[in-house]
Length: 123
Image 1 (cartoon, one colour):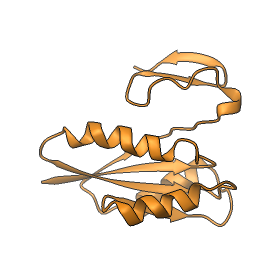
Image 2 (cartoon, rainbow, N blue to C red; image 1 turned 180 degrees about the vertical axis):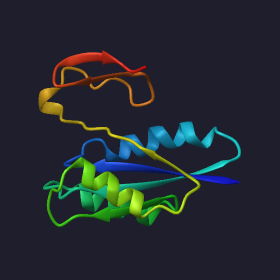
Image 3 (tube, rainbow, N blue to C red; image 1 turned 135 degrees about the horizontal axis):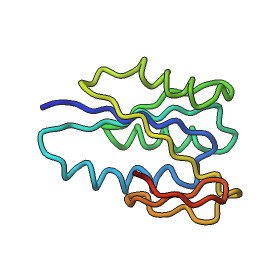
Image 4 (tube, helix red, strand yellow; image 1 turned 60 degrees about the vertical axis):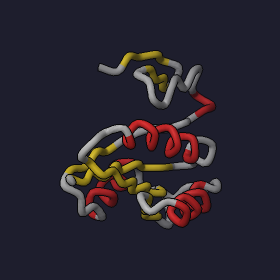
């Protein structure tokens, strides 16, 4: 069975971490012949993101996390995730709640997303 690591940079994502994991886990569980794992990278969050990631990692064998002491930016977080993977394939996801600047976060499992009050369709 091939392995796929999903690298997820996180900055102040306490509001969406659990829902993101639960929703995406349903979808990847339905994909045959691949084993999925998550590498969440806490990019110096100031909220409870790290605490929630520790809980997810303790409760789920498919979750690991890396944590930065301060915010280094999403690119550094993605690189840290890539440095910590041992999978056959890697997916780098970039999801941000940024709730204050969004009109509509869309559906985590769907195709629609919104950033900075600008609605776009993923291709």
